Image (cartoon, rainbow, N blue to C red; front, side, top):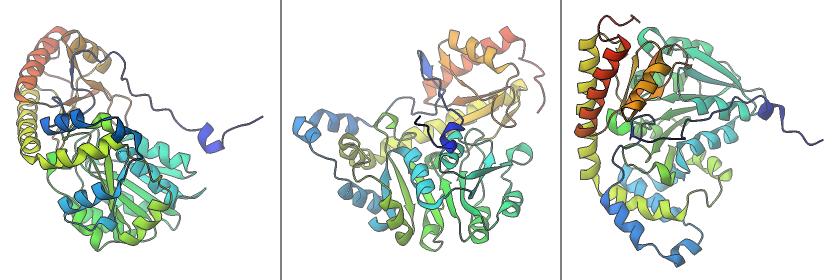
Length: 358
């Protein structure tokens, strides 16, 4: 009888709760208003002939490389950051290798690593979810082939200092270090320039968050040109669809739209953190477009918010996140609605004063 590989049979499942998302969607860290009007205009221009052709990735890669100030040979467009993770696993991991993650973090790192046959070493974050650089370096062995770090991290919003990331890259010269910068726009600091000097460093970017293109599934993987040639060998030549490729230049060309959106999200983040602080709800300062807060019975909290038309994400099953929810931020008017619903929910659940400690 046909049977999948053992690594596949033992994979954990990841089922994002996408069904029934009616209301203000502050649960998946998406852009709360959507993409630039320039992208919508480009979509209206696409015709049947454009969709009938196989997608040509290289011209758009050249435009993105110019935008980022790097060589086109250093960059590969991917089907979201998920494919970038998958490609690194396919390129560098063999059965029995080790791969490192600091938890809590994005679930797909573990899944793709395990699918490649790696033994995944989970390293708990430090106090207050600080990045555990010493522990990571201590767990590096000759079998370590991939280390994945989200920066800012999801679901905590915490960041790893550049010096810590450089130290890890130096400590593991035979391993690929992926720094996933999906939330770069909300943080503003990057390891991109270091890829020119550190051959085992890779940076991933996405256009699903600040750019509002989650539905088009487009991201990028950046690294040393020689290493990127190896990654391209395992990538499909048609991995990014023609609609996404047609729209990305227009999204890049409207930086005023992105900057204004990011500005409002940061302002909203400050407002939410202040309300949580004033109310006594434990939370962790974030550098992303979301805030993680400990509200107690998280599933009940999520349901009460849903009744008020606000969707937030239960993260209580993540390591160290018992009783926590993650709340995405949007524009000023979204935050007005969010804070009003929060106050009503706090009062209804009796957690408006003296919430549980961390």
